Length: 246
Image (cartoon, rainbow, N blue to C red):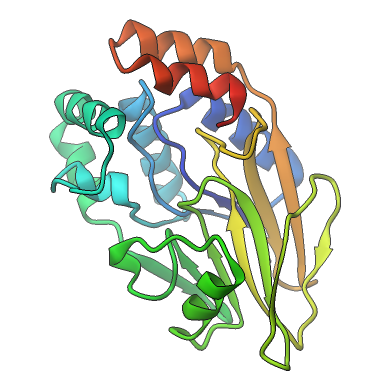
């Protein structure tokens, strides 16, 4: 099965639509959305409704910390994130709120665990950014493969048979064979707010039958997305960072 892994859409409709067009061309059997559909961006309603349609068509959709924060305050949010969340709560309807509140924290496809943050205490939203973080996440699950978002940075960690964990930065256009004698932790990056210095949306296709990860970047109209953020009166930094991928 070829599974498209999308995460951290963050109310960026331009990025989501461009990514889904790329996914259709890539030829996948199923889509998984790993959370944070809303927050930061100016199109939370449109993005939630697109993801609701994906879920109705069989996509697996998980909850992220910004999705949770629609119904419950998150004390860890910075001032910009909190301002965007207050605005987001005001534009979402009851059906959107019910959908976001009802999403699960994890999903499972055979030997693959899907989660927004790490596998260790997923509702506490841990960041997996280092080999040690990945080791802790591996220690909380028996899954050989773990896929997550949350960091907004594409990353790959491999736990070898000698228990050594090594980190890699996946390169767009270079499929990565996931050796079956190792465990793998995949950070898919962000669709709507990349933070690795590249403005293009990030997602990945995981071919479970072939054991191959395909990292993808998708250029989109980030200027249009930024203009919407400014027009909504949201913090300017949320707009300006889209062009920088930071």
